[in-house]
Image 1: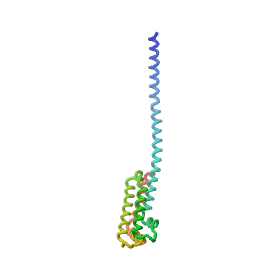
Image 2: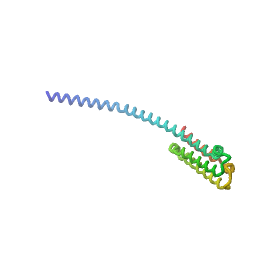
Image 3: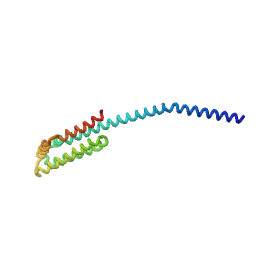
Image 4: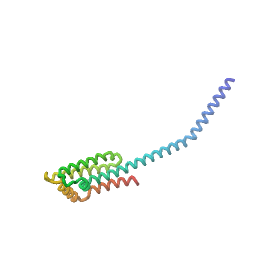
Length: 176
């Protein structure tokens, strides 16, 4: 009697395990599909957030290009009382501050955009340095501004417009 009782318990246990095992394998594809759908939704949400951050980075770098354009710097910072050296120092400080403010954007943009931002910054600093060196020590900020604008006017292509176009093109590729 005890043997029959144990045998019945083993039969029921094995039967229950077989039913549980079969149910698991029947439900497994549905569970995997549900899990995959959840992963896809999470990736889409993350991509949407990343896209927003990347577009903001391109926007900020375009603004950086505009704010470091010598024409805009001279309009924004020039004061008729500045000497050439004072204006030169003020402009270089402004360029460095703008660059430091935007340096983290390199995480979100492509190499070409970040390279062009660095090039614009370095070329602008070089332009300012060469202009101030070409002037006599007693030159005014107005003299400095005129010389910078003359040097920009001699350029075949406007590097600031070209840089902004490269950044815009790279940002547009994100939206395709």
